[in-house]
Length: 241
Image (cartoon, rainbow, N blue to C red; front, side):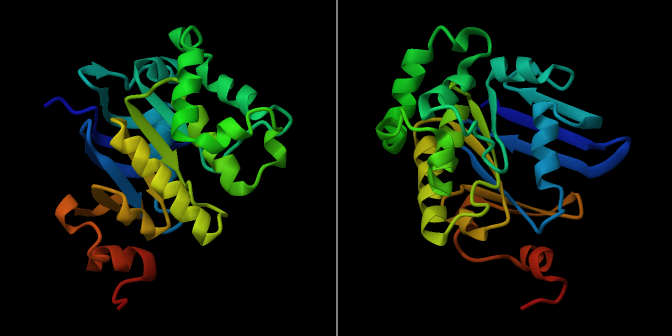
């Protein structure tokens, strides 16, 4: 089976300085990959490199059978990638529905915006209830749902999610992770970077980043059985118990 997303030998960073090195990822159509690690491990840079939002010094990025490593970010969106960014980044003065529509401005997505809105409202019914509300008046958890919904408007094959739990209360974290699990179950591959290890309850595979490189891969059958030693070290320091 052709991978939905394949990354090989990725070296990426900013202003000529590598932040991540030798990153290899294989994302199947049915994968929910959690990329975990401490702050500064290179998680966000990995997603930004895949989306074409930072410098890539080496490696390949393929979406299905298409190489997108040299493509503009807009072309990657058209090819089936979408990013839900860290910090939500909603437009506070626009309504929920207006925010969602900004996710459908690329290529043919605009022509299908009505169907896309219907799909998003089916997955995220709270957004349907609040469609006329200004995004800036919503709670943090609701704004995170809006950010996820906006990224779905282009009907991506692979959804990249950056720190969806950031700044949310524990009950809202669980709700957002359940939403991501529902999106994954509907047929969208997901790569979610997280500091919150509770993402392991919904992921099918875990990759641990430490100082810009992959230190451990935890297969699906081991997800939910706690952190491996390499993962514990990445979070708490070598020798942590």
